[in-house]
Length: 152
Image (cartoon, rainbow, N blue to C red; front, side, top):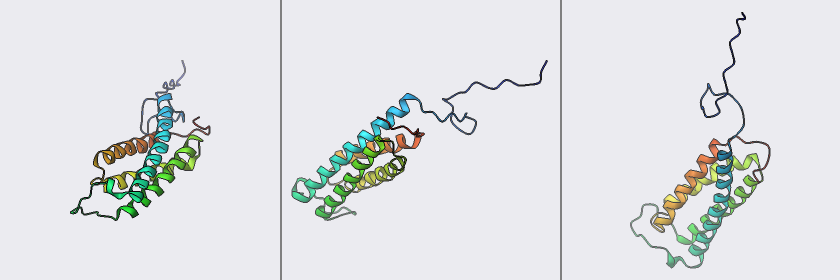
């Protein structure tokens, strides 16, 4: 009779320091990252459009005179356009499997959530939707363990 103990079965659903280091993602995690990349591109495009609206015709936004974080809507539009372009480009490179795009996506989704929070009085419902989407993108990019292959 030998004194060897059997190796435990891998449990990929377990998280934490006792989980086996398999390095593989389940299908739904990879799918969520693919969805997050598409959301980043869509969110970036919508941010560009929101920026164009603010620059071209700022009378489409509600004006709130007693808001603490009050900005000039033209400058605000340029900020939206810049972050929108960066989000869309980063989402594209995330689809291509670029490792840096994952970290840049977390940073840019955080910036997008902050800018949407600051824009709450101007477009409240859309800002709340964008914040929720940004939180999902951040979560999906944080739980993903990158393989070296592109997502698409």
